[in-house]
Length: 409
Image 1: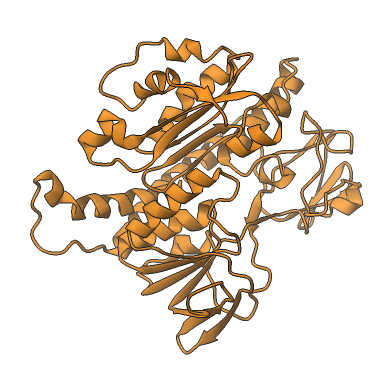
Image 2: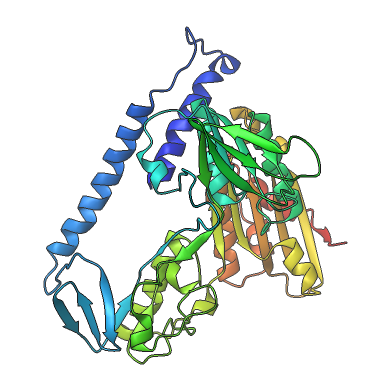
């Protein structure tokens, strides 16, 4: 919520600057008051936090204890001087930004960026995945110079190459500098700024900026919970090991959310709760393996993703069909003057079930759900292909796209 509130402010600045394209004339240059941007974000977040906390504290038979909890054994948790014992314990400790290798240099993370109420002159972002790219476009729209550095050959490497390439083009069109194949990344403070040294195949070998944002990944908040005293197993990266019902290896202990390595999103954490509650309270055997991976990249235009990527389909050796449509051929996108991106769907050639989809374009984070729902129903793609969607919308072009499926070469 806090990051997306900032994204909304950045989009407002972007649209205002484009006003003349729509015949809307705004006098003078568009400027951004970062203190007001932060204040708006703080109000939105405070309302949400206070609402949730108030609901919890006023719930019958529920006690909120604030403090750092650590296991003393598999049934006992200590918070300060108090001990709590229970037959069922649920761990939902979350994760934090990984910052290894940048000690001794002032840096920001996705958390500390929430307290920024000024405009960095030149923001250097190390990490070319979801967190880094959302902040990159956001601060470029606020008015900062922005450079994104990544060790990989392309951005958002978990996604297909055509998606990665299109996202890079969207960011570069707005003035974000992207440096890839950074083989060795080091940072040092120089005066009031920071310099990041890199050994790339081309271009300058160091970049000087005013501020550094680390977006190189996440690490689970499991290293100071006393898990070893409870005998709870973790994997090599520190994530708590769980089964398909989110049970740990210790009877009576479950792990939910980012700390179990089964997802890194708010919606996967909430789905973890639904799975555990269904099994414990409703005798409804729900499993983590039943869910279809879905997520969004909230740059503008957004990316909505569901199911398998093209690379995963090819790696599995599945006989598949693929359809693709540029947003430039979507009437709604043309009307709004936002034609960047494309839609792509992969279908099993035998069962006709949808295997995966990517919608990079205006409304892509919403459109993806019409595809996702059909995937959960395990229905053939013809169900959505024959549906009559309202005009003019982005979703109406999904059936049109599906009518043009071709074998995946």
